[in-house]
Length: 345
Image (cartoon, rainbow, N blue to C red; front, side, top):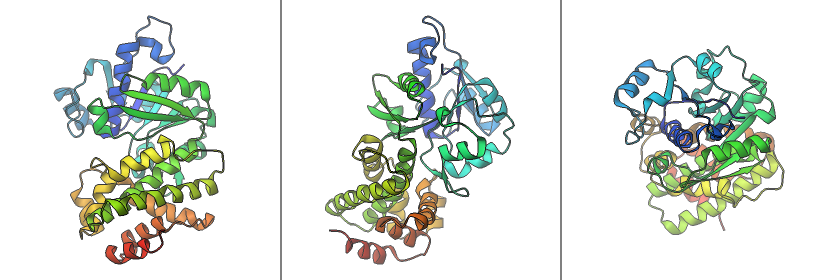
């Protein structure tokens, strides 16, 4: 059984997931958590680091900073700024914080995570550890493989807020619990499937952010749709090469958890990584682009980490290299992208 659910994070994706889960509780009752038919679902536990954000949420009945059009019945939510209390109260823990901040959130944790079902909705990598999030929980907090899952697929929080059709993939080696969790999230506008490729989905979600920055840079440089399609075609091939090197199993990278997530992140105006890249292509410095954006572009951190990781695997990754050179080596975007275009066929 999934048991009581807790969400960790206060951003747009955490808010969108809370919306999905609470709608499931209302429509399916305790059956959504694997409880007997007719049993009511427990309130959702929601951890936010800042108590003032919780106070504003309770007063306004919506997230004051993200997806403010989504209103919540706050009587069905137990808010807490104490991470240990949130972990103690729930059996299924959904983490939706930006990956660079996850370690800082967990520094105060004193409760054992090993017997919890950990779901990462974080499409990023832990920069200091150079680990995808499931590996971080496995290695640092001794969470067994069977208690780990990841939410993947093309899923802009803004479209979830609008009730637009969304397809999610739940990656886990624990097929039964993954199916239960997928059933929890499923609704008329959220379609779900399961996969056992948890590591592949996570690395794909990191790389698609890097490629989205590349797409934004090219857009900012006024490259057209013709080239963008060539860029995305080469990006999925580059992703496939890396996934085969780091975790060689039988997978289809043209499924939605891989190619679908890449396309929506590379093309959509909702994509913060594409917006960040566009600003770089238009002449912003990295620092000025980061200061102007209201949300973090995870691909900035993912680029450096993936570059370091690839020193061990030696995969041919010209797009990753180009983005790294622009963001970290301060190579002029126009020059670097021109060199990249010459490597494509």
